[in-house]
Amino acid sequence: MTKSSKTVKSIANADSVGQPLAPWTYANQEVFNLEYETLFLSRWQLVGHVNDVPGIGDFMTLDIGRDSVVVLRGKDHELRAFLNVCRHRASRIFEESGTCQGVVRCPYHGWTYQLDGSLMAIPQQENFPGIDKSGLGLHAIQIEVFHGLVFVRVKGTGLSVADHFAHTGHYFKEYDVENYEKIAEPTVQVWDANWKIAWDNYQENYHIPIGHPGLHRLVKENDEWDELDSGVNFGVFVIREKPSRIEEERRYQEMFHHADRRIPDHLKGKWVQFGLTPNLGVDLYPEMLDIFQLMPVGPDRTVVRSAFYGHKNPTPEEAELRRLNMSINDAVNEEDEILCARVQKGIQTHGYRPGPLSLQEGSMFNSHEMMRDLIPVMSLKDAPPANTIRQKNEELLAEQHCD
Image (cartoon, rainbow, N blue to C red; front, side, top):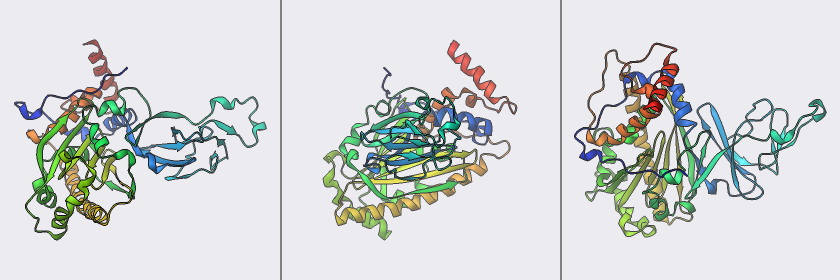
């Protein structure tokens, strides 16, 4: 049995935060390859919500960098997760989301699978003498449902999703996330920045007053926050009492209490924000939930995926709050894209060394510490010679195991 996550020492009580990752780690293909294997394929990735796939044969896919996965509801109503690839010649089978009519059929050669992933039929099977279909089903991967949110893990072992969110998972119950449904179509963008720059940006609020003046007019941080050694952090924002001078923001402030009826008293007037390293942000509002998810494409390009969920049958006021929320946060996203692209350009400047971190950047530092622990070559101040980084990382991992 794995141990649940524990609270990390409060950064706010520390004498100093510590050093961020070295600039070379943000623009190196060899490090990128190690990150992809260790941080993305080996850690939980959110695919969607159980209510995205309510019926038999319903499926949803997720592209994780160069890999693709599918979550499929079987005839027994159980959800299963598979690599989205045919066992014959590696064709992708599923696209986006939809419904299979009774079976899964590869669009290339027609290999056909049951909804539980087992291989059912091979066209012209006589040309495969002695083939054993029992070992050629779709490749199953790990799946876990957490308060209605569906996560998969391609490889490796470790904490469950529930254990990752230990001490903070009760928020998902209090917001009744299990009963949410999709309220808007997901959005997908490609940012010209390393995924870590985008994740660093999401993790810290130090940049909000300058980078997001609208968000700064609307909300402020309070003293509710926590850091878990599993890579989860959370913080709480409260709606400012001073009316914003911008009509859309002021309207949101004025209407905010209309969604409070669905949540306990101690959550009224608040936004709760979660980060799960390396790439998942979850924002809980009284009127809805949104997802901020990063998928690496290359050392300097990142797919940014947003998804939106909420209660069925919202009141007219809640529907308007959702519209205002998405409009306000669309602007925040656009600002973040520009900010991250500027950092990507600047971090490659010859001779640049990072300055000190503020106490508001503690979550960013903790995620960097996790990366340095899992991929110790990232702890080096300067890049090793080209084509030696994987070997150097293996040597450092071996030293860790000897300590």
